[in-house]
Length: 239
Figure 1 (tube, rainbow, N blue to C red):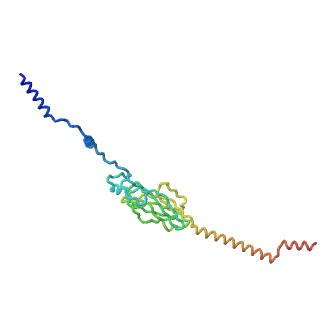
Figure 2 (figure 1 turned 120 degrees about the vertical axis):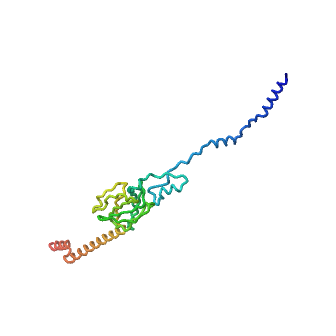
């Protein structure tokens, strides 16, 4: 009768040794599990280093190609339409050299070239050379001292050129332009050398007039005598 009990005990012992024991997890095992569960998030796009008013600014689409993750460019209008007018910026005049440095900002449109227009009084404007799309600064040369001009910046692409108001006319003083438009008035002051020559000329003329007046006064005095001296002599003779 004790045999079945012994068999059951032997069977339980065999089952206990056959089951694999659980092994404790090391810290590196937890790190591997956390790395497996971590989901890689894609890099977020950032705005491109693009400034519409920067001289020799690289086009924004080229900046996108130079980055591993494409950056964000400002919005542009359709290339099927002519570009919006650029915004005229600072105009620095160098009166001594008869030139001016014109600065502008690009519009929110595709641009293939820029061009400066210069009016002096009435008539057709003087057109400068075509400038590539990276240029934001150009020079105007041959300006006359004391002259009044109107300068405009034009942007162009395959669809046409930006709009420019009729800036020419006989009276440039009466022309008004928007504060952030493509055109502005340009007045060249007289050269400092010219002012010095004018001052020297006026001073010389005054000196000559003074000399002539003194000479004329002494000539009259020698010819007619001094009126005060003659009156004194007559009074002495009467006494």
